[in-house]
Length: 461
Ligand code: G3I
Image 1 (cartoon, protein in one colour):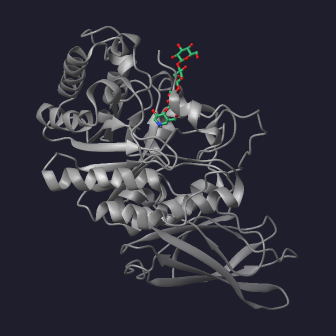
Image 2 (cartoon, protein in one colour):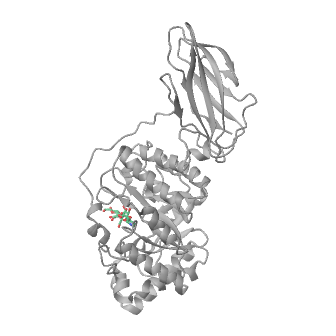
Image 3 (tube, helix red, strand yellow):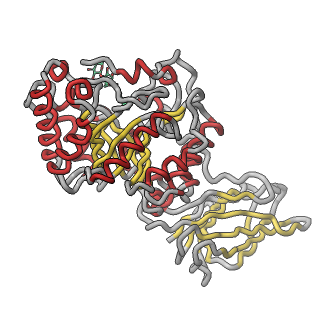
């Protein structure tokens, strides 16, 4: 195997010494103090990354490794949260054609059939790349190399014809640094600059329905490298070379943070008439700083109408390609990190929902104590619809053990057998337009406990 030049060149992405991993506790829907607290309650589609992205006309994907699919939590998180996948290594040249013209699609097929079973989009990664390239390719002379490259593109794309949303046809063909030059590789060195154009033309012929992308890293802001890619795409569009999209890998850390002109850079490529996609997102760090960076990336994509989706480069931190650190949205135990909440909120979704099938409808709740007497207090819950209209809502109110409820209004309550958990549904006030609100109330006999009851998250229908 050829040494991965991107590992060699990116000091910012070298494996680090092990660091303590941040764990996030999934505390959802707890209201413990008097006063007002808005709960990120929810319904279904908008309570997952994929569902919320879909409501914005985008996909939200993850890089997936076939050998993790058998792990229950891994597959469950993938299936619940994501609506797109990219095989992390399984479609690379060394995986599918380690000997010339002898193809092995086993591991990649596993991912493709899993994704198809869940109606997920699939990004094909990648056809022509200097890394993870079997040794025999580098040993070929120009004529043989050209025919091997075109044969590889054709056979792989035809195997997956009709199943792939977008292919990274050529990956990482430009050098870092200020020159904007092409990276040395067997393709560049023996076939010259024209190899990229040839690869795209061959790809279009092999599967005319797949979108054809150029994909690279450190092209996320405006710099010499992204300018060189920009010039190439502009030239391709002007000359009718088939290219449909540009992938921005977006591997970020403290030395290489989300650039200030990230959105403008995506936009200038989109203005050339191609889709743009965030293809390998991961951001080193933890807590609110990491969450803020993830939020900015998500907002930038949403602000560019031709940004069709975001893919994170892995699911839990423990499976990141980075040898240490915590760059992803889920911790080692599949707990949702603050970065997850930030992305979901930026997508217009809200956490804590039931995870299934509500068609983009969502609602949030907030609570306030409105009046207090010597032995009782009134509580009021405001229910607000998310970005879509809703026709019903359900909210639970859990009393403290000493408390009882003596009256309710503007809702239809039912009680569990303990008499402490009230499930409130509408009483003529279930239809709410997008962003509209209603409220229901209740009187709590405190019996010495003046704590606010626990208000559960809101489920919309
Ligand atoms: O499968 C072998 C295993 O049999 C062997 O025991 C083990 C020992 O090292 O290696 C395993 O292969 C590793 C492979 O990942 C699968 O885990 C390779 O050594 C390792 O180099 C390879 O790393 C991949 C890297 O690309 C290679 O360049 C990462 O998983 C993958 O996340 C990473 O992805 C790239 C994108 O394709 C392009 N952009 C940058 C991105 C991050 O580097």
